[in-house]
Image (cartoon, rainbow, N blue to C red):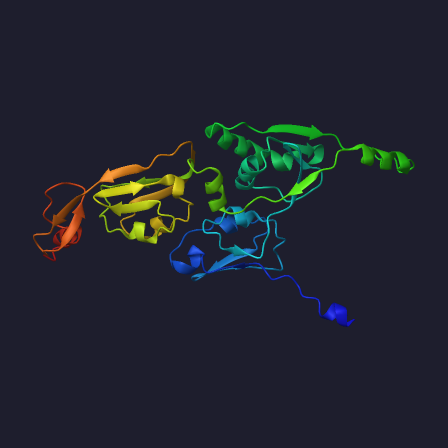
Length: 294
């Protein structure tokens, strides 16, 4: 009995301090929650938690978290043969983001599914092929297998049949949106849209971006979408609401460069940046004048 009493349970899954929900009080990132099939992830003020009683460790959250903040969960181990994933029993359905990594890491080019499971997997495969087509990659083929009829009275023949079958390989892919960036370094998965008419060039978006997808300096405002992981932090801190982030797959994404000018306000005498040359009033003083404070 003592042997069983000293048995250590595996650590519970947690969301660590990298989570943008824990760093920005107004964060709108809910990628892990929306990808969870059992609603095991909940949010509160500057906090995010995983309910270990509900979580069955499917690993979906690993492929949706923009900052790799999920700990103590491993990606689901899947079986494959040559360049086909093999799904012959009811296992957690993979997200498109996971299959994108299988495509590069294991060179998988199709999926073999037992007929009763096709309907569960078909939407994911369709979404995957749309992205692969955009990336100019080979799309996955679908191979449907009929369930084998089992004759319980002929066990030796069934055993012989199993011996004749080629063994299946098992594997796990690398996790996280950052892993996807490593396999597709020149492609992007999100679009950053800037409305420079309302942007006041305060620089908050660049400071909060962990991936340097937004860079401001040397009179250039650079949006490098292939670095973006979709955490939405830039969108949250932008009080003029000049930045929006959308899911969007693009092949050979090139940075977008906007140019701005150095200026000095004639009212408060402080330096500022402007989208136009020879502007004499900074955005703050302009706003104060509109409100009648100056």
